[in-house]
Length: 247
Length: 247
DNA sequence: TCTGTACGGCGTACGTTGTACAGCGTACGG
DNA sequence: CCGTACGCTGTACAACGTACGCCGTACAGA
Image 1 (tube, each protein chain N blue to C red):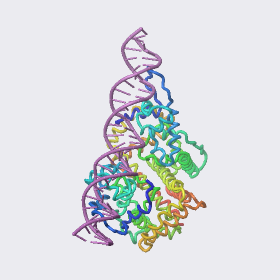
Image 2: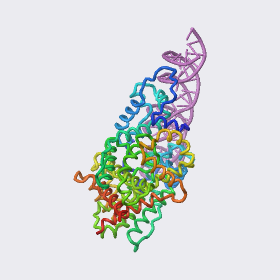
Image 3: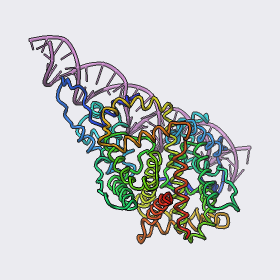
Image 4: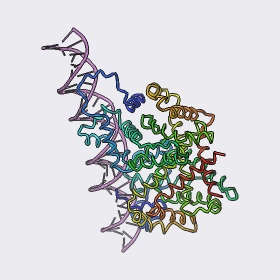
C-alpha cells in the first residue's frame, strides 16, 4: 500500500533505475507480463480488467504470485500498465488535410476500435488519468484532430480539452450500451425472464413514456438492422454541437 | 449464484410473496436495510457502493452477516436496491411551460445533484439497467423533458432514448472528472508527487499539444474560479447539437 | 391444547482475493 | 573469495461473498 506515484510513472515510462544489477537476472520481461495480462483481461470480457488477478497472471506466466511484485508494485499499477499499453497500441489514422468533422469522426472510431479489441477499456475509470506514454500519445494525437476547428471556433486550450473529453465520453457511453446487449447474450431470454414481473408492475398509465420508449429502444437495440444507431445519433449531435461554435 | 431475475425485480418493486407468514417475525425492515446501506456507501466516497460489504452492513445493523441473505439474494441485488432507492429519492422539478433548453438543463442538474448527494451513483454501470420503480420514475420524468423538442425536431422514440442517454452520459462524465479533483484532495500535492518524473519524460517537442493543453486543463480544474467550466461546455454543446435537429 | 412445519436468524466453513514478511539462493563489486 | 544486493517464493493474514445446516419460533391444522 501507499505506493509511490513516482515509481508507477517510472514504470509506465520504462525509466530504469540506476541499474546496479547485483542479484540473479530477471526471468521475465515486463512487456511479456503486460502482454499476458492483456490477453487474460481480453479473455474476461467487459469486466476482464477488473477480474484480472495476480494469481491467475502468475499461473499463466509459470511463476509464483509473489514474483510479480518484483515487477510491479501491485495489482492497480499492473492494470495501469495494461491500459497504457492498449492506448499505445492503438492505430492512429493520419487525417491531415481532411475537414474537422472527418478528423473527429476518425478519432471516435479509433476509440471504438479499441473498445472492440479490448472490451474492458470502456470500463476504465475516466477520472483517473494514467499519465503513461500510451495515454499521452493518444491525447496528443486526438488533440491534433481539433487543431483546425479550435482555430476557426477560437477554442482555448481548456475548451479543447473539454471538447475532446466530450467526444470521447459519448463514444465510451455508446460502447457501454452496446456491450450490454453482446454481454447479455440472448436478449430475448433476458427480457423473457423479466417480463412476467414487469408486466405486473409497469403500469403504462403511470409511466407512459417509459413503457413506450423503453420498449422501442429495447427492440431497436436487439434488432440486427441497426445496432449502432444510438452511437451515430450521439456522434452527429456532438459534431453539430461543436459546429454551432463556428459562426 | 444464478439468482432469479424475477425475484430481484419483485424485491425492487416490493411485490410481497403470498405471505403465509409462518415463522418468527422479521427483525429488520428492508427500507432500513437499504437506508443503512446507502449511508455506508455515502461514507465510502465515489467507490462507496463498490466498497459496500455485506459484513460491514450487517455490523451496522447489529445482525450476523448471513442474516442479510434472508432479506436480499446477494450483494449485487443489495446494490441494485440502493441505486434504485437513490433514483426514487431524487427531487424532480416541474418544468412544465418552460422551453426545452431549460427543461433539459433541469434534468441534467437534477442528476448532478444526485451525484453530489451520492458520489458513487456516477460509477454505476450504465449498461446494466436496474428496472426498479426509482429508475422507471426517473426515466419517465426525464423523457417528459423531451416532449416538446421531440415533436418539433420529429425525434422518434428510439432517438428520444438516444438523446436522453446522450445528455446523461455527458453529465455523468463531467461529474467523474470533477470527483477526481475532490477525491485527490490536494491537487497541488498530487501533481507535485508526479512532477519530477513527468518533467523528465514529457518531452514538449514530442507531445506539444498534450503538454500545453494538459497543463491548461489541469490548472483550470484546480482553480476555484471555474470549477465546472467543462461541464457547462458539454451541456451547451449537447443543447446546440440537439437544436441543430430543428430546422 | 398439542404438534408438525415453515421460516427467521446465524455459526461455521470454504474458496477467493491482495499482499506483508522472511528466508533462500544467485551472481556481481570490492 | 566473500559480502551483499536482489530475484524468487512459501507461508500467512485479513478481508471478501456465500453455501450449508442447525436452532428456535410461531402459526396451521387436528
